[in-house]
Length: 274
Image (tube, rainbow, N blue to C red; front, top):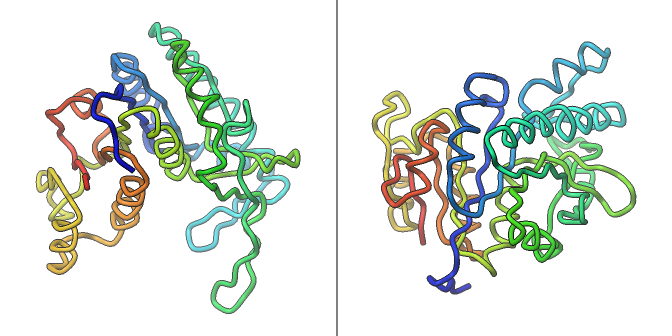
């Protein structure tokens, strides 16, 4: 997809669980987010709060290959925590910072319909992930989201979608952010920013100052050939290139503390481009 450089810039910003779990870090991040003077959307993870409250309610968290099994009890907990407690606390803090935030799940205004993940075979055994949603970007209601942006609302998405059959679905926040960025790239020049605890993609995982400032596909292949990337970052880079191939202008991976700089041309993290 060719992006018109005259389009207005939109920032789709995803903040991860480590910041959500730390009230001081979250407050600092939201102050920076509120200061971004451009159309923007925030997608947040759930942090460890759902697990903690679930345990208090006697609901044990179950994982397979690092992925949460979302059974009937768990979907109730994550809906309450992600869509309620976490989302509304963020919205309230942004309102205090004079950002007119509106808290959303994918069910609101039918913005992100999804499909319940089918049973998968893992290690020769069937695994039912439960109420987990997979997104088809073509199904997103981008017009509804664009209307909110045009009215100067700042959408704040919890990591929840719906199956159009009345069920909420637990959905990966990175995936939601990418889908929103791709869907809105028809209207805006989109920079998708993944905020986490590292300064960016590191050439040496043990050296926080070894940030690779720019990666295109040629550079990525070179880094892979030289075995200079640690495995944990590979899915984020692959997702970044998938978003770019689908129309997103730029994807940035960087430290939550560097958000302001990472919405300018003088970025601190790793900028991934075509």
